[in-house]
Image (cartoon, rainbow, N blue to C red; front, side, top):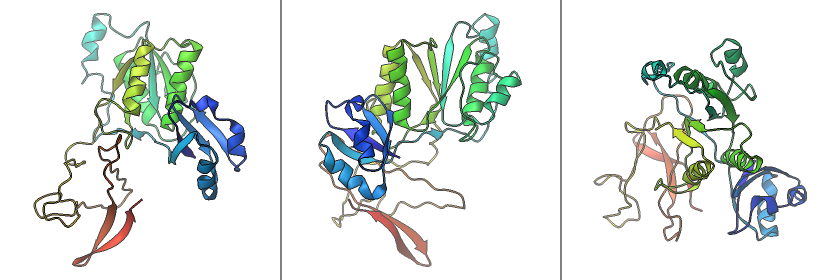
Length: 287
């Protein structure tokens, strides 16, 4: 599956499904300004060259569940019992809980953890969304909960596009969004994610977002500097390596720099592994 960026002014609905089938693929979600589809890897270059409406292709943006060191129902910490006592229990509101994984969601509904549930989701991709829905139901026990399962950002765009075109049939009034999206903008209150929030607000939907669990040394940010002129960025005084330790499990890295409009910088990225007293090149990105 790939995510397709289109030339300025081209809408996803304008790209024919036959363009994909001509290259042995099929069209996927049609977002607001993004298009997903499935294509054979060996034919990607041909596909791009075949139609000038296609700007470039990348891997789809996927959501990351925000799971902190402590998992709880959270209602007491959020002081919702005090609000519920004065009648603020979410009655009359439909809250869309947006997530990727809703394993055992049906069991949670059957057990009464989510008393006012509508809609259906697939039982896969982890239980983060199920837990989030339970927390929302604890905080707002009178609200109707609608689970929204999105495995890519284009699918999320497509959901809200459908909400607009169908007249918001579920009457969604609030979004609860406890995931993050990385690699799509530098975080200046613009970019794809922020634009989608603005789009939801234009439909009269309030958006509540988790603030993230990526602090405490889990990210690095700095202006580019090369004081010794050797072409390497200096992460600190006389330090040209950004180091970390990994003890098992999966490691994911996102590298981003604020050069979206003019693209005046060409930065290469190198990944090294410590071996003995030296460093061994693992992989690099120079394109």
